[in-house]
Image (cartoon, rainbow, N blue to C red; front, side, top):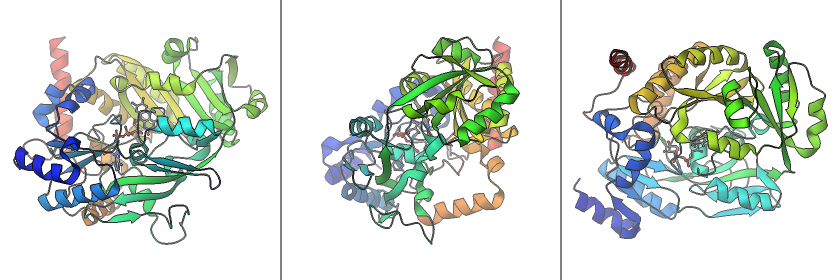
Length: 463
Ligand SMILES: Cc1cc2nc3c(=O)[nH]c(=O)nc-3n(C[C@H](O)[C@H](O)[C@H](O)COP(=O)(O)OP(=O)(O)OC[C@H]3O[C@@H](n4cnc5c(N)ncnc54)[C@H](O)[C@@H]3O)c2cc1C
């Protein structure tokens, strides 16, 4: 469609000040991680337009328009996800959700109702001033409520409270056919009893099934938080001990730093690594009863949020995986070997539950473009070999879907996508479908593997 037509049509829906044609403002952000020149050879990377709706009504109008014209829509919050989740690989319209940022805290009912584009930072400042908190938080507060839900949302607090999916009372969602639905019984009552549990359908869907416009989430009282650092002495004893600590229900989070990151980020020498335990103040005594495989090393109080925010920057992203806890030390060994080919700073991760850890590889920010994509691929492959799976799909992890879902499950998910989004306009060719390249070719796992293999050969030759 002609740019002038798109501008006129979208401007008449939202007012022209809320429409940008072209996507140059995206390029900087893409370049930081993916090296946009290399990427743009294979895929479209810039949108045809960016729109900034302010309410659900406007979203419905945009969706109806896109459905009519078969234009891809890419919902976007803070844009902090790392796997190309918001890359408009077939062009289309980025729906910037950040103007949908009104929220309300109901202290009596203990619920938060927030526009999907609300920043976590804003919500947390307000909740904290009332000694309230959400069960789980992303380490990155520059992300939005809708973005965290759409990424499946494991973060600080998950060990105790589960993922963001466990906090949801209701999601208001605009479907690709322009209908608005609520996944709960009402905006303040959780309804799950029978029927399909719809809010889980949109949790982790990465914007491929609809646009979340509002979320109602459980909140609870929270006292002052403390962090204690523990040194890992005996690997073998540590797992048992960590599981027991995790199951005690005393801790919001247990965060692992490998030897390298312990030194650079925490200033603590620890060959095997450090665990930071996050808990409410009065639980302290329970921790000190445990002293076998791990011992307390410092009284210093760490600000876990700030620490993780500094380490988890997009430019340092080298992959993120779920891993059974007992695969932890195997993967550390493999990462040592990966250092021969890549510049890697270390491994950091938090327990998602007593049995599994969400582990993030931190690489040097100079590793960009295809080099970074091959690193993510190598890291995820190792994790799958250890019964793990990638955390999030976006573009780059979609190549693993056949290894992590059985055939029938994948068929069911693709059927759901087809039924809900018959025109395939909602963040298309991602998550449970392979990406389509610029020339319309589906990028199959074999094509992807050949490309990354050639990249490795070229690098070896040029050394
Ligand atoms: C410092 C840092 C720390 C991080 N830590 C974690 C972590 O611990 N756990 C974790 O899960 N992730 C983490 N991430 C990844 C990512 O930042 C988070 O998942 C974040 O919550 C995504 O939110 P966002 O608003 O930036 O979403 P975006 O990056 O804008 O979007 C993410 C996905 O959600 C979709 N989406 C966004 N808004 C909507 C909506 N309203 N409706 C439907 N779909 C939508 C997008 O299309 C995209 O697929 C981290 C990233 C960084 C840089």
